[in-house]
Amino acid sequence: MRYDRNHYSVPVSEVGRTVTVRAYADKIKIISQGKVIASYGRQFGRGKTVFDPWHYLPVLQRKPGALRNGAPFAHWDLPAELTRMREALSRFSDWDRQFVAILCAVPHYGLLAVADACGRALAANTVSKDVVISLLSQEGKHPEDAVVVLPQKLVLNQEPVADCSRYDKLLQEAHHVA
View 1 (tube, one colour):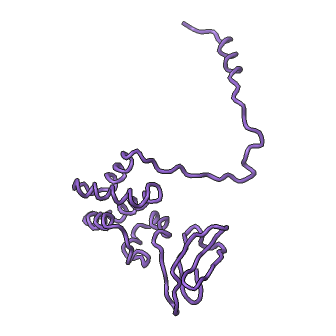
View 2 (view 1 turned 180 degrees about the horizontal axis):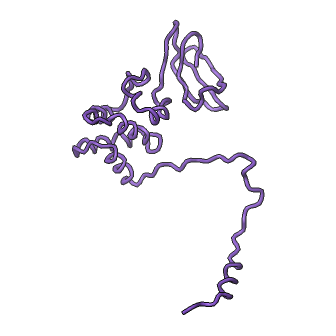
View 3 (view 1 turned 120 degrees about the vertical axis):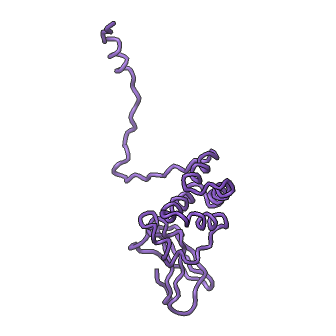
């Protein structure tokens, strides 16, 4: 999103959509469909670009190689455990895919829980996305169920009623073979 000759990132889900920008003396808020989707400290001058790397997580899922050279990820301020995990994974050829899989757990479990799981995996000297995901699932915290919003035309006008009498009738009429 561009405002006052500077660029501010928005979540990839909002690309191509119309957003509202609220500019204040010290901050910029970007609003889509009545919801604040991004907030930044306002940049003064020209040609500056401000990234929020979390906005690009869906892109990383499809193209994990962007983690190596992508501008949004160059100065990503992650918790120390995640940074150490990234460095430890770098010895593997598929380090970027593994690290992206760990990052994808953040929206479901939270940044602190993922960082803690990375720390425990590193302490146990088991560096792998599978170990981190396993540690997260063992904590008893389950990823939040996705909320599905149905279009109005798919909403039922009349809820179905459970009626087992028809099934019971079939059982009574059935002849059992011994």
